[in-house]
Amino acid sequence: MPENTHNLQSQYAQQVAADLERNAKEQDRIKTEAAALQDLLETLQKDHSLLVSVQTALGGESAEADAKKDSGPAVPKARRAHDDAPAGKGRRTKRTPKPTNGAKPAVPLRELVVGVLVERKSPSSAAEVAQELARTHPERSLNITLVRNALEASVARNQTERSKQQNSVYYSAIEKEAAKV
Image (cartoon, rainbow, N blue to C red; front, side, top):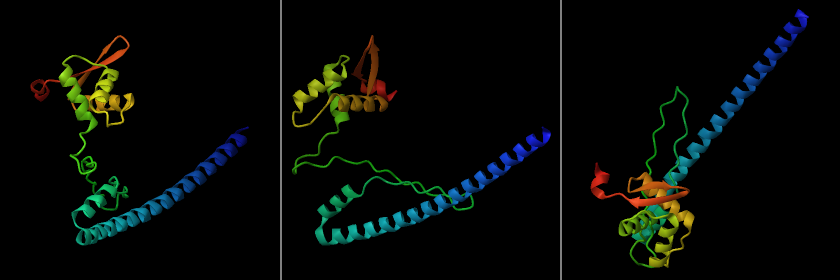
């Protein structure tokens, strides 16, 4: 019986060693692919910058605005191994709403929601805020989920506060003086 135990342990040890070796090879393969993709991304970003500058020179400022709109979200750099230099962090820029038909820029929904709560001066449910916004801004396509998400975003920015009463959630605006403290 002790021979069977020893034999079983050696089989497990061999299997674990083989699994570790496969895992290490797979990690190396993925790291190589990630590095190649990161290099490709950096090349494409440089090409994009060059093309945007050429387009701006040819087409003026409106071409630059279109290019910035289409540039997409910032992609963080790939993680480097410990022996490589640390990767830098990309900066996220605040996106501004695009003007519609040459009109003034659209106001973010979060600001509209806070405005409704400031006017009401009493706690309001998401449904009440959505109804008010639908009444005052019929050109916007709104649903309760969008309004609720905007309300939660304003809570996260300390512009409004959330309170629960029984099974309902109510939101109210925070006074500017109290929010500064």
